[in-house]
Amino acid sequence: MISGMKWFLNVLPILALVAIADGEKQTSFPEHLSTDRAGRLVVTAIEALGGWDHWKSKRNVQYERDSTRFEADGKATREVQFHKLTLPPEVQVRQESVRDGRTVITAFDGAKAWVMEDGKPITDEKRLSGARNSSFGTQYMLCVPFKLADPGALLEYLGTVKLSNGTFDRVKVTYRPGAGDDPSHVWTYYFNQKTHFMERLDWSNAENTSHSISEYSDFRKIDGLWWPMRRINYEKDTRGDRGRKTSELVYKNVGFNNAFGPETFTKPGSAPSLR
Image (cartoon, rainbow, N blue to C red; front, side, top):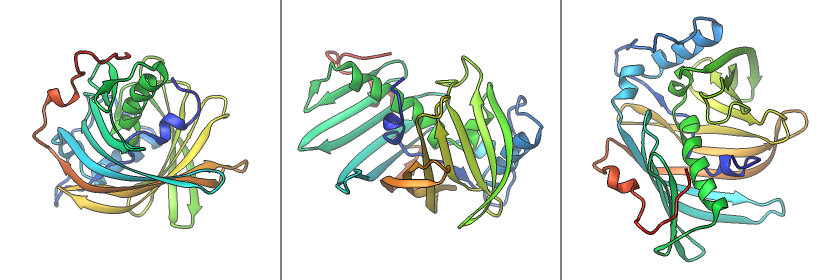
């Protein structure tokens, strides 16, 4: 894994995905989901935000992402990316963008990551590793609260906290070895008590030497699912509060169950890859 949060903030948003079923509760939850308070919060969120069956009806998603990144010196850089993803349990991701005048494709085909720039394969292991890590990070950002029902997810209720935009229930999530992509990572999810939307996510490594805060807003209903159209990422200060803003991501043209197939993610024959 790449150290620090650089890969984390480059992942596909996400973002937290929430769903509302039209007048119908669905309760086909995985049987292994815990029944303690943290587990019940996840179940309540899934019920209120759409239901397991409604979520599972979505095979894939694509969207446009307008990203602005802010350096410590105040300099801002903007990039527009086009994303296509399969939804769990598969992990297949394709990101296309024009960066500094160069067309870049970053992808994960379900087994290995690959990168092309202006039609030429990239061999740099750091960039290949970044493509792989961002693809896996997508699951943990995009699929909340449904991802929290995975086998091996360890849920711990941390109580409530009042923020400027409401009162939130907090759930800490870690993973047993072999379950999460990196069991040393610690995730804290903030669920709005009124909407049950996940509107904030804190991340840190086990040593707490690398961490961040992500906030989600501007939810819009798209094909029965509520999507956060804006995510703002911050450094976390020494008090655990928001520090410097590092990026702002805006999502456009979001659509589910698209016609693209596995070939969308297939590595060109000459492109190196990294498992």
